[in-house]
Length: 172
Image (tube, rainbow, N blue to C red; front, side, top):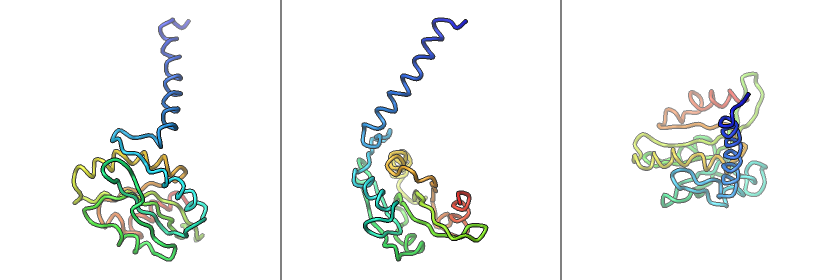
């Protein structure tokens, strides 16, 4: 049989899981260990972006403001290219980005995928690198449904053909 002690452990785990789920959904996209939360406007803008409604965009840039909240830092019109997007990322300055990437699959089909790209350049301040790494999960929760996440630390890792495209094609 199962001892009384092991029964208590079995009951504790599901209750803990339930409470962690409750807290996750009642705390503004779950403040992460860094204490950074996501601006409410991001989730609404994301829904429009995902559905192709409202402002027609190619990408949205996000930044952590005051080490407290992730906010929108910029937007790229639908007519912008991937190169324009890369130009909007500054060396030494961390950013998150949601980008609608259009590409051709390995079997020749045109398609597009939403990608969450984290730009944490090697020459950024160490504190910024740490806070961006520790706060990414909060943004991922707000951008529910984006399944492709790419981390870039230098311009070579941002290269579309050699770095980003091969990663994105895995999901096409």
